[in-house]
Length: 588
Figure 1 (cartoon, rainbow, N blue to C red):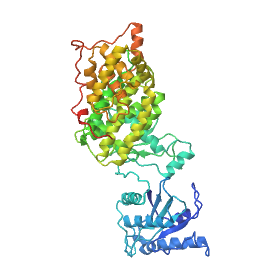
Figure 2 (figure 1 turned 60 degrees about the vertical axis):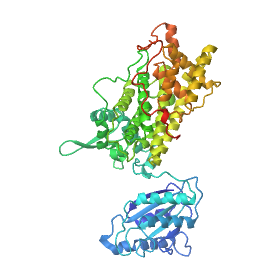
Figure 3 (figure 1 turned 45 degrees about the vertical axis):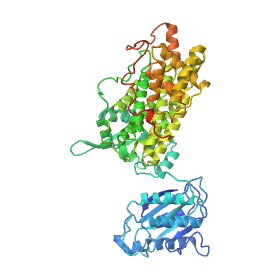
Figure 4 (figure 1 turned 120 degrees about the vertical axis):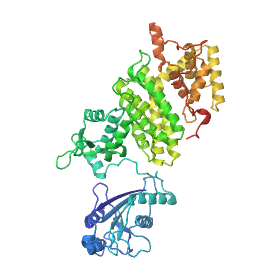
C-alpha cells in the first residue's frame, strides 16, 4: 500500500479531475467512500441533482474554513494523498477504504478522533485499487494543523494496515532513498520515447562519472565527456558550492534546459558528500594504476579484474565482521559494480548493470563510518575503468567470472549486514543485486568452467582420485557437502592439478581458499573455490590460455619464487583475514 502526498491551492480543480474521465487511466464510477462528517455531498452518487452544482457545493464545503481564516490560511491549503494497493492485493471494499482514509487523516494529525475542530476531508474512489484523500489544512478553530513528518507517518500507518489486513507488506524506508521521478517526469519520458525519466538517466551517469574519480576536477570532466550539461554553482568567494546537470535536449515549455541538482538525484550525490568520498581517494592518482600488474600475456582488463577480485573478497570479509565501519565498504562495492558495468562485455553487461542499479540503494543508510578507508577498493574501481572494456572471451571472460563470483558473496554479505540493522530496503536491494550477478556469472563462466571440467575428466584416474579425496576431506572437515562422484568436482580437480604442477601444495592451497571467508551462501561451493584457487595460485582464469601458451612454447607460468620442497607459502596479500570460515555468520 503506497501513499503519495502532494500539496496544492485549488480544491475545486482537484475535485473536477477526480470526478472527471481521467487523463491516463479511465476513472470509473467516481464516488465518495468517506468524509469528515459522513454527510458530504457526493457528485458521483446524487442523480437527483446537477453533478456540477453538487461538485461546487462539495468544494465550497471543504474550503469553508479556508475562507473564514482569510490571509491566515496557508497558500498551499490543499492536502492531497493518493493511496494505492499492490496489484496482487485483493480489492478493498468502500467500507475498508473509508477505514484507510480515517486512519491516515488521524495519523498525520489532520482530523484526530474525537476532535470536533479537525480539518475537513473527503476520500474519492474512481478505481478498484486506489483512493484520493483531499483535505483543507485549516482547523475548525481556524488554526493550522501540526503536520510534521506527514509522509513518514502515513507510510508507517500503511505498513500497519498491510500487516493487519494480510496485504502485501512493503519494506519500510529510512529516508535515505533516492527521489523517485514524478508522474509528470514519467509521462514526459513516455511521450518523448525515453526508456526512463531523465532524473534516473542522470543519476546513473553521475554515479559512473564518480566511479574511481580521484579529484573533483576529474569528476566534472567525466560528466562533460559523458555528454551531460554541467553548471557549477559558486559562492560569492568563487568557491564551488554545488552543481547541476541536465540531459541535452531535455527542455521545459520555455525551451530552457531542465537542471537537476546533485542532491535531488540522490542524497549521496550532493557536492559536499562527493567531496567527502574524494577526500578518501586512491593512493596516488598521478601515477598509473598498479592494479594492472601481473602476467604480461594477460590483457589489462583481465589483470585489473583479477586484482579487484582480491579487494572485493576483503570487503566481503569486513562486511561479515558486522562492524559499523564496514558501511564504507558498501560504497566501495557499489563503485566496483559501476566500474564492471561500464566495462563488461556485451554478454554480461545487462545483468551487471541491473545489479549495479539495484545495489545503489544498498550503499546508503544512516550508519556512518568514522574511520572509513576505501582507498583500496576505489583504486580497484579506478583500475578497471582505466584498463578499459573486456572482450568477454579468453582470459577476459574468465576473470570477469572470477570477479563476479566474488561480488555475489559481497552482495550477500551486504544483505546480512543491513538485515542485522533493520535496513529492510537496503537488504532487499542487496539480494536483488546478488540475483542479477548470479545470472551474469552463469553467462561469463559457461565457457571457462566447461573447459576446466573437460580437463578434469581428462586427468589420469590415479591423479583424479587423489584430488577428489583431497576435496572430500577438506570440505567435510568444514561441514560442507562434498560429492566426489559428481561432475561438479571436475573443474576443482583440474585446478588442483594445475596448482600442483605450478609448485603448490594442493591440500594447503585448498584449505587456504576455504579459510578466506564463509562459503555457506555460495550457490556452488566448487565454483567459488575454483576461482579462489586460480587467483591464489596465479593460474590463468581461462584454462585455454595456458594450453595455447604451452603449444606455442612461450611465456609459460613461472613457479613461485619462494618454493621450498615443491610447496609454497601464502603471501601476505592472499592470507585470510582474522574473520574466517571458522566463525561463520548465519546463512542469509
